[in-house]
Structure formats: C-alpha cells, structure tokens
Length: 301
Image 1 (cartoon, rainbow, N blue to C red):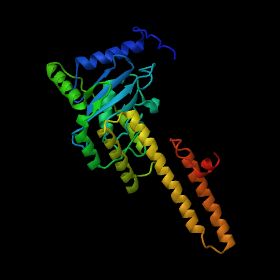
Image 2: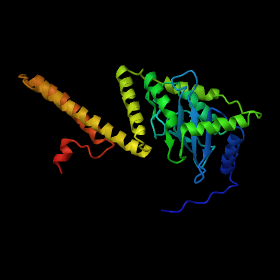
Image 3: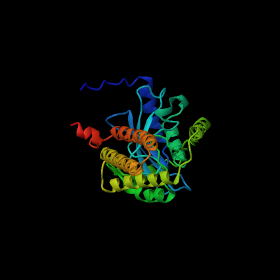
Image 4: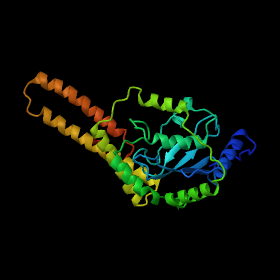
C-alpha cells in the first residue's frame, strides 16, 4: 500500500479547510459542532441537535464528513453514525449538498452551511432517496431519546458529552456573534425538485419496512456494534428477506400450476411463472451477501 502523499498547507484547498475549522472554533454554535480529525484533515466528525418542534427535537446525532481533494469546488459526502429514523447509518446520503448532486453545490457554501442544511433536511421525507429512511414519528422519538448515549469510537465521547462541550464553548463566546446561517434558497429549491420528480408516495408497507429497519439500527447500536459491523448485519438481513421472497415465489408458482388441466392455459401460466421465477433468481443472485444462493447455484457446485 502506497504511503499517503503529503499535502501542501499553502494550497487553496488546505487554506479553505483550515479557515473553516478556525471559524467554527472561534464562533461556536450550541446546536452543532464539527472538526477535522487529527490524523486526516479531510475527514470531519460532526454532531448536531435535532431540529426544534419535530420528532428529532430531543435527539443528538453524530456523523462523518469526507471532503474531496478538490474541495470546495466539489461537495463533501456525509454519513450519519447515530440512528435517527431519517438517515441510514454509515451510508452516504443523497442530498443537494452532497457528492450525489455536484450540480447544485456552490463553492461559497461550507461546513457550517452544510450542517444547518442537514438539520433542515431531517424534517423532510426521504421518498426513496439513497441513504434515506421514512420511519414513523414514534420510532424517530424513541431513537432521539436514546441518541445522547451513543459513543463515537473515534472521538471516544458520547453525543451528550460532545454537545455539553459545544454548549459550554458557545456560552463562553456569548459576547461574540455566531454567524446566522440559513439554508440557501438554491438548496431549498433543489431539494424540493428532487422530492417531486415523479416519485410515488410512500405506502403503508414501506412505512412498516422503514420502521423495522430503523429499529434494527437501534438494536444493533444498543449492543455496541460498530457501523461496519452494522452494515454487515444489514446486508445479511436483506439477503435473508430476498431468500424468503424467492421461496414465496416458488410456492406461488407451485400452487397456481398444480391441478390445471388445460394445456393452453397451463402453458401461458408457465410462461408467466417462469418469468417471475427468473426475476426472483436474478434478484437473489444480486444479493449483497454471497452466502445466500439460489438452488441452481447450489446444485451446480
């Protein structure tokens, strides 16, 4: 593995990152905080309070920001490490301020703007976006109540400890004015366009699935499983669900074709069933976990 290339502290990117880090330290907010790691200035850890008057209002949420080498010409990427019921854990999220939508990013925006936007976006619906979850308000509130006790393995502090330090720093600098940052209108419009671009409204079944996934995130973190471990568990669970769906498809095919006397009708049904079976097999083979395989792949070994 090649050694990391030394960065030039005089480069525009480095000067920008260091200036933003200093600005956040000199003008802290009681609602959010962020700082680069000592070992990697391009990776930041942040903690934000949930937006007020919402299901997240009692919550504290930790996450990671990864800055590209071309920052601020290119947008950062975001991952939450605290379960919230709104964003998946340890997965890059698709927002107008993230690397998924470089066309909406503006170099004038920075980490502080991104944190304010993240808090605002928590109240919106995911509507099937990458890294988004649409859990019910009751699940979001239960996660918010549990969130202060979550500890970051890198920062070695709980969310409550981080926000307590953040509040103390903000009180200490109460004489100085913390910049008042609002979500830029361009971001609001871009995010609204994403949500209304022909996406179907969420169904009751999808809502139940989102609640189940959100609760699973919470259970894993209560057992002190790290995000990477959690990601592995989620892959296995999705593969198991695909296996169940595949088995159900096979059972449906058997029940619909059994006892049919008409050859023409049976032929048409078999064609439809074969197509359904093929789609189920393809979906199962594309499962993220290789230990779950179709009967065909097992019989060929």
